[in-house]
Image (cartoon, rainbow, N blue to C red; front, top):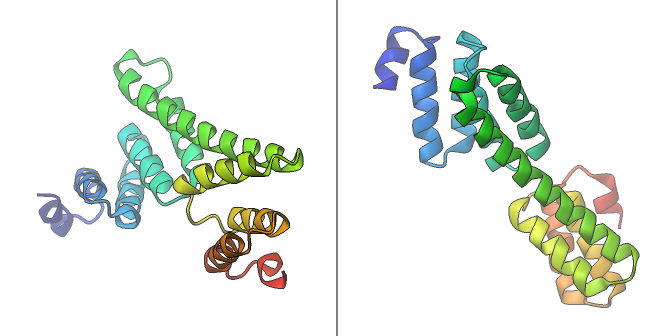
Length: 173
């Protein structure tokens, strides 16, 4: 029981790690990330905790931060063949991050070339995985405004304001 271990020693690496895994399975990503961080405070070389932290941060919609944690996990795995399974998991998650970033690049290129429908589809595909990316909602909203798709534009711009409340560009337009 992870909570019992933590009651005895709040810095116990297994207690924090096991609690993090339980929280991750429950989809409680913020709590899981905090527990993975505590496990790493106690044991900074624990590869599984770096990998778990990367997964949790990715689920929270912060892919660039997640990529840094996953790359660190891969560095720790190094040439140790026993850790290949962890390196493979980290590599697959990094591929997913790159694929989503490619969607954003495709959306921007299509918008630049005047292929509005393709750009809108790519922006929406990107936003399915990164729903809280306010600046990208703003880009989509501006594209929809230029395409005279008012209702869709209003919805996208509302999301931009919702997810980027302190971004002056979003609130200026």
